[in-house]
Length: 126
Image (cartoon, rainbow, N blue to C red):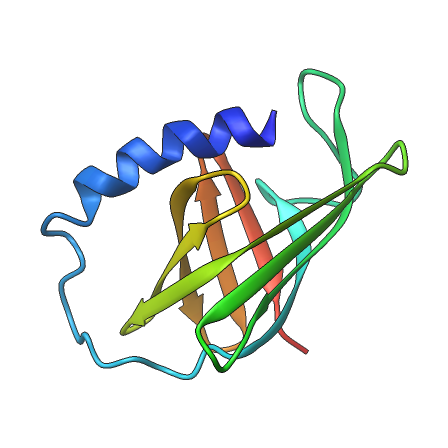
């Protein structure tokens, strides 16, 4: 489910990045661990319409420009992705090397919002 959602998002981002970043392009500090707090405003665990539930997820943006994304589903299975990222102003572009696509997050203070298809995930950095 997540892979299919992110593939659709990759296409949207490719078009969006072609001229929609706007504003400041100087990187802001985004390094740290971001814990998933909600999906579409609903707290965790979140159950998608196909019955797949997400119990927790942590995205760690590292100083060397790499990231890890570890998610635990409600049934106990886990999904771990790795990749690299760049940031322009408050926009973080994540290049997922595990699934082979690109998606973006918007950082505002200690929160990062990641939109994947029609789902918006809100992450918080402690």
